[in-house]
Image 1 (cartoon, one colour):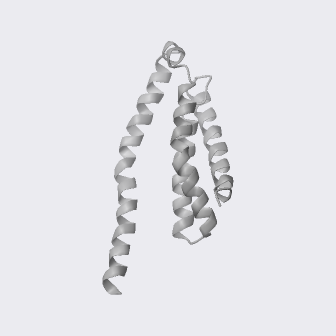
Image 2 (cartoon, rainbow, N blue to C red; image 1 turned 90 degrees about the horizontal axis):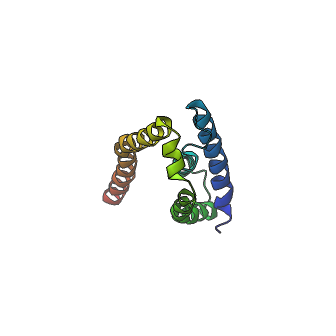
Image 3 (tube, rainbow, N blue to C red; image 1 turned 90 degrees about the vertical axis):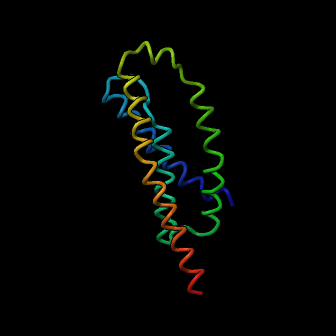
Length: 130
């Protein structure tokens, strides 16, 4: 049931928006800076943590998978609403925040890649030993 993943998604979105508001206030921008991105990262890491510790029942897993699949179009729609021209006129803080977000995302790629490799190697070990 897809409804079971909604609670986890809602908690991640609220936490991400709060972090984005604080980050915006910290750098002097009167806007949410990266809240949706933080929410998406939080959803990925929290669902992975819960899955690895067997704290996610099957209906909840299916719900999280559904919301994870639909989350990217939602993010694109939300980003389309933001006014990029106003952000650029707002000064170098907005540009710096965007550049830093891209740099952090690129830096996290090896970490995310290792997460996938751990799962694949344990799966191969199980298949070979059985």
